[in-house]
Image (cartoon, helix red, strand yellow):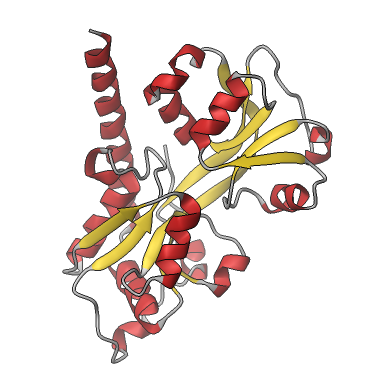
Amino acid sequence: MLKILSLSLALLMGTSTPALTRDVPLPDAVRMTATDWPPFAGKDLPDQGASIALIRDVFARAGLPLEVKFAAWQRSLTTALADEGFLATGPVYYSKDREDICHFSAPIGQSKVGFVQRKDTPIRWEQLEDLTGVRIGAVSGYVNEAEFDKMAHDQTLDVSTVHNDALNLRRLAFGRIDLAVIDEANMRYLLSSDKKLEPYRELLEMNSRYLITNDHLICFKKSDTGEKLRDLFNAHYDAEKDGGLLSAKIDEISRWMAARNQMDAR
């Protein structure tokens, strides 16, 4: 289950609260963007996903409602940063480049990121150089792991991108790629819920070697208001309590998905 990072890492991401004392007005509601990334976020999920439920609960303690607009990842990020009506997007992964555009929240969860493969053609690798010549699928605009992303950008690795993880799973099932980089929880949810992937549920599996464990963060707009909202969120966020809430919500979504699959099978 997802783990919450230690206080020291939370402090690294900026849990201090100086902006709370500034004369910066708060909005009447927190308007953020998100992309469909089950079980963490999704417009059709209970409470719009486990991470969105957590974020909503934390801001409710601060007296602010949360409104979420869902869009494909690149559009979601662009809207959050460029549209004056929105002040945040998430959950996201950290990258150094994003420091220039985000006030990062404390970590609110984690992802085990690795490769999904076909069971009938498993890939053995020890270092990324071993994957030279392997066709790898990724999602456009996603941060994965720094060395992997650099090798993909430099075309040292054969990486092609699409707009979402479900498309990569289908490409893998059809033999158009050999691996797809993905969050493990997201892969398991998609295989259990996506009707187009149903014939391939027993064909695909996670590779035993993982790339990285990434923190889930909220990217608040790089503005005084964004900074104040980041500090307000961190001040009301309780890692132990909210970590339990996140785990419970993921379990709830899994039960909801299982019940829906049973209904569909009748």
